[in-house]
Length: 381
Image (cartoon, rainbow, N blue to C red):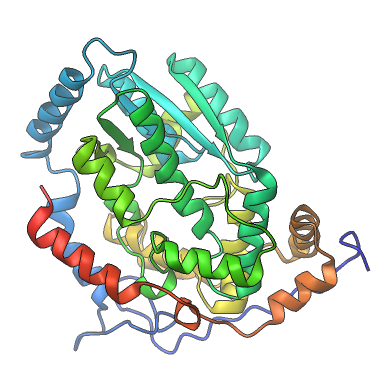
């Protein structure tokens, strides 16, 4: 059987036994805890960190002014004063708009892993051209990347997107260093992404884990793939002096307002969070929920509830429906299998393989926890 023949979708169900009374996080996170009133640790922690990590009218303005001045000063005499990742999604495109509005001179960089949707490609083009921002695409070696990501799929771990998650910062830092740029502006933000269980995604910077999966399930060596482990991160930060700035945490950021502004720039909606990538859409809307009981909508909706962008009742209504379109699952599964170069039989077998975790493979979890703990205590500045 080849990858063009139909497949039978796996059944989806939500096995939550308890749902937070304030947000919609649930016992699908094995590490969740609840207080006496049924409120979970995720939203409690969100509100504890809210004032430090989101826009505050009294303090964020001066912070933003100071960082913009530092960026401009570091970029004097250079073509660009900052580098920004752009995926075609809401957050990254709006971050570019904010940077341009602040009078900065960003170089927008897209890490192309071969899975971009047509809509994402158009969004990048429209936003950068309309704003007059230079754009650079860094294309990964497809055969090498395909083999690596397929290895993670075969490993039956939730971290199928780890190759992308590690290649993005590696690419941005390399481009920044090549251009003598000291600041990378990121579109990630606490207001709409502040809740994400650690149990749902292991540290993408564990290069030992990445290489172990590749050796066991891949068919080739990593020759050009850009890795970004602890040593490289510290080198970029302390030797080359490159800093990350989460600019959307320093401005009043509303997803709805951002959508309105971006649509004025010719931006189009692509159908779901991170669905600007076809593989990410497939993984987050179908594979993770049905195989691992990881429904990323719970984290996204809970963040939006805490940010006041949606009510808990609205979120619960959304969660009553499956995270995927059942009528399209078979077609999308066939597409993903064909792009990976495997038969639909192998894809079905992979989907049916019992879930595993990073702890089933060689990893540096304890060592990295020690290193990053020491880094946060003694080196961070």
